[in-house]
Amino acid sequence: MKLKLCVALLAVSLPLLAKDDQVTIQSRELSVTIARKGAELQSIIHRPTGIEYLWQGDPEYWDRRAPNMFPVNVRFKDNQFSYRGKTFEMPRMGLAFDGVFEVLPKKAGKKKEAKVVLALKSSPETLKYYPFPFELRISSQIKDLRLLQKYTVKNTGTETLLFALGGHPGFRAPFIKNRDRSDYQYAFSEKMLVRRNVISDSLIQEEQVDFLRDEDRLSLSDERIPNGGMFLMDPDARKIGLALKGRKPYVTVDLGDFPNANLWSPPGMPYLCVEPMVAHHDLQDSPLAIEEKDYLIKLPAGKSQTYTFSILIDPKEGKRALEE
Image (cartoon, rainbow, N blue to C red; front, side):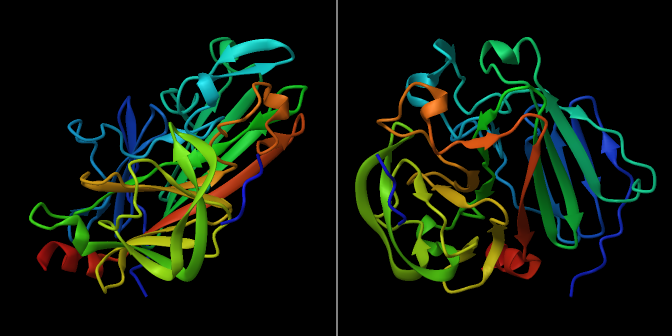
């Protein structure tokens, strides 16, 4: 099956705060906490107002906040693949999801940066699920009101590395309990006319449906929003935000080097996710052999590849979202 394309304050860093299980970076504007488990964002707070922008993992709805996906986006069909005739079981969301990352020491001369780098390396345990040596580094850096998320995949083996990669940050919506989801909109940086492939059981189907009709806004209560994901292949809009109806976004994801995006905002849930993706979900009719999954990235031995996306907050709009 072939898919159809459907002037802030200077961020002066403060001391990096660390616990055994998480690390916090701070500037005058933002405080960002990252867990070692999964290198998962735990908090994005605008310090002058104290407003939290990241979804806080309420287990009644969804107990994660911003997981990372590698080497699969969501899952492979039947949660498995084969390589050179041998079948491997791949955990849902991949190996980075629950992997314990190492916090790397800062380089000389860089200690004042509001930045941290976490790394996950292949091990005898990961090789049971994924027979490719690798190193995945995820760096988080504050620049004014923007959080840069940089992912570097390195092939430390002797064979071509096959992978997909994704971020999965969740954001609060509604921002306060007495608001309805219908007060909120996806805000796209460009008007788009899009037909998208249906996603069912976290797999991309051949069936297509109308999604955007030369629009740059979509209400969270719109009937076009399903329980599952909404995958956008190489969208013209490279920035996707969350806004009160008729207002500027209070948080925006800039896709940067990530070509694709998946949107997830199940009806009735108090959050939404904007998921930058390199490659995409597996296909309903995808072959078992990982070598034949032609949408995956192919990274030669000894090479590395870097991708960056960013999260930008607008504190004025965030404050309005709390007060109005």
